[in-house]
Amino acid sequence: MSAGAPRLSNDYDGPCAVCGAVVPAGTGVLRHGPTGGWEVFHPEHAREPQPPRRRDLPGWHRRRLMALDIATTGNRAAVDRVLTAAVRGSDGTSRDWMLDPGSNLLSAAPGKGHGVTIERARAEGVPAPEALEELAGVLTDHLAAKELLVVWFAPHVLTLLHAEFLRHGVTPPADRLPAGLAPVCDPLVLDRHADRYRPGRRSLEAVTAWYGVPHERPGDAASDAAATLLLAQVIGASYPALARLSRPVLHAEQVLWHADQSRHHRDPLDWPFTAVQPLPWQDPPPA
Image 1 (cartoon, one colour):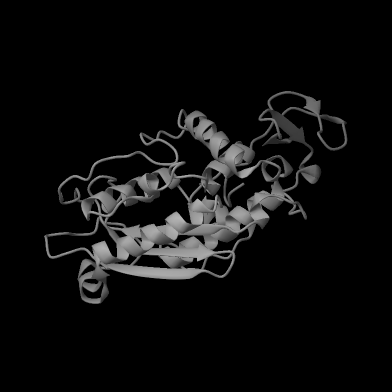
Image 2 (cartoon, rainbow, N blue to C red):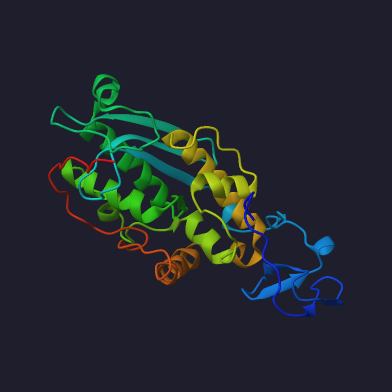
């Protein structure tokens, strides 16, 4: 429960979930139970919610993983541009790119927290086609080995990146691989599935804090990729039902879980991505 959130009380008498004794109406503390229903506690028995215990489980989370993140001019999948990209691997792989988006009139949307300006990207970045070709090669090589690509909020990252590949004449990894863009692991989808009734925000910053995962510079592509990698490993170690899934089954289940989650968290994009065509630049709406 987030700090400062109101404490819900019971309207009716009910048995305490810890001791079983009756909790008179109006004197207890209500909490979501593990299956989504409400449980009532005596105030002295109500413990603050805690993340699940990490276990020494075999599974996909102990294999070679690679996490990807990008910093962009905005969140419009077919319009906005990639300014930086980063991958971090459990085998020590660490690659970073800053892209020169070109000389056309671009601007970053208000509120983007990565701190990379258009001017800096033009001055320090390499030509976008060159950087994107390198990135596509790294992603393709990893996925060709049938190892999981870890992406937080995969539909938005991978859809925008797919449009950028096409915009700059780079063959997307989805078109280089016989099985398409798979297998992918999205910790946001996993967390929403495994702990669907937990209150509070589900941003990368909030979820890493919940699981106790270090996240030094939220919004920075390299920091986000590193945090996402560790988060996937922690979630796998925390939920045996997830850890036991094979990589192909994990990918397939996330398609279904995301579709179910989208009924409550509206998302027009497919999971893990939508094959959109790039559109010409349009200035972002004012804040």
